[in-house]
Amino acid sequence: MVAITVLRPHELSVAGGAAAGLPGAGEVQIRVERAGICGSDMHILHGSNPFAVYPRIIGHEFAGRVVSVGEGVEGFVTGDAVVVDPVVSCGKCYACRVGRSNVCARLEVFGVHRDGGFRDLVNVPAANAVKLPADMPMALGALAEPFSIAANVLLRTGVGPEDVALIYGAGTVGLTALQVAKLHGARCIVADLDPARLERALAFGADEVIQSGKQSVPEVVAKEHDGLGPSLVIDGAGVPTLLEEACRVASPAARIGLLGFSPAPCNISQQEIVKKELTLVGSRLNRRLLPQVIGWLASGQLKPEAMITQSFAASDAAEAFELIENHPERTVKVQLDFTS
Image 1 (cartoon, rainbow, N blue to C red):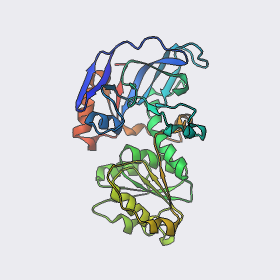
Image 2: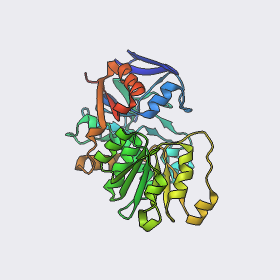
Image 3: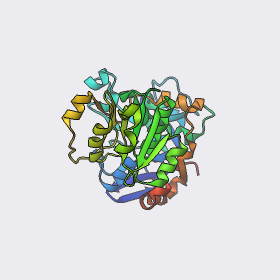
């Protein structure tokens, strides 16, 4: 039994954990096979995630196979391949009643509010287990959750072939947003400081890239929509000054989706928002969008396998975290293999 736990900020433990026990009523037990390390896992390790309580078994991007079914569960049998939606909601509060379970008043997320999937065996509510096609590689299935984040923000903003999308950031968040926006036919421009990341963005379909710091983002995007600017802006970086810039460069009637965040204040012009009638939306996690994402993956509409830049045995998780910490330029998505 391997469990990867952040005992307290800056202290990672890779050791044997307590047995999962039998699944309760309404639960399934999953033997984890693949799991992806997310930026939020790094934040928990650094002590910068305000929602985490320590010690915490981390991990919310994980896929595996059902090994046991609890009382009252239908539709799952031993051996089913599944990916886990990490969002656990109450189903009763206002947000849940209007279909926004991802911002449930009693929200709990695997790997943050409750112990997550970086362990061999985990019990989850059956409602949070989403079946994968039997022939889908588990490594690909484990990518469904990060793509659901992109699907959620673009559902919030809307996206279509008439759009020119400016995406701030070419990390995992930006690359998933890029691929989902391209799937919907949008022209996509990606801005980032790192030329290596921009090369990856081009490989994943970016129509144009901007190296921030060496090029002026406002000058480059000013030509879009006959001089009006981009109609869609996705902020995956969370730098406060970018929101102010987004409001300036966006076209009239544009939508701005916020995925990154910072506790620092941000100066934005009410005049820009009102004059252009801009729509600003926040986006958190996903609202039951994994089945849609799995459909995109299964059909080949999304082909993101190249995002998996490294894979480590789960027992070598400390090395994986060290690589991400010290050489982020070499990584996009690092996965842990719990079968080796």
